[in-house]
Image (tube, rainbow, N blue to C red; front, side, top):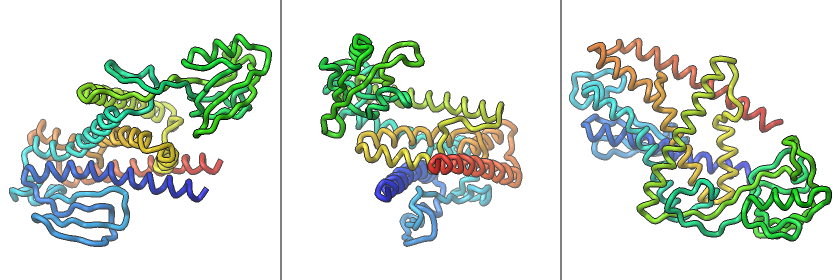
Length: 361
């Protein structure tokens, strides 16, 4: 129990550190390219452990390893007459600096997918793209209906199904065919779990769907890889697909929040994400990297939303300045940023509270 908790915490901290640091490096790089003075690039958050100066920027190592931050000259609207101030730069340059972190999160997600697809990663055969090299195909348990015959027999998600009723399983369509042909009697199911071969007896039953089965969702999976050129194409497509899913999910969440005042089921805060990260980390480095890619894209999309206190919200103020011909008053922008920050923190706390209740229950 303690070991699992430590794995969850440490893996979550490590993943978050990388994602946020990459995001902040995007801001840092763009700011330096446009001649904006960077006061500080912090690794982690204070209290401070150590500091050193390089090329006019103070680099700091801090005790709280939950990402990082950059402090830019003029990011609060001050020093607008100084050439090395963020506030002095043209609107398009400020937009690039503000959105560079988002871009880096997408670049990281894309790069991780490229590496995974070149090396090879386990995934459902159905989602493999054109040009894929498919090896070591097998049928696994993807999910179980609670209190179904398969669940009562002890089958678990991730089990590789070797044979049912003495018949070898080579594709997912074999499972319902063999089960239905053996309706009315208990049948032996042989699976492989963590290198061990296990056999259990399962009694097919009439399910809620109206068909005879054992209540298991099966997937044909394989090790899927791509030649280098195709890996880049597949990674771009995967990044696009993940982005689309995240946008659709956000739309559903926001819609339900405004119509019913309730949070969508399945929405996780830091605690829930930490638990998932820990479980994925124990499954191996490849699943963990897949999660890193997805979370990086997710972080990029969240930050580009037009909400004050996020990069997207700050970009909106720059665009408004361009449209109306003058900047918003600094006080108005600060109040908007504060309100946005409070709302975000309130939402995070609400989701975290629900995560904790879920763990307790």
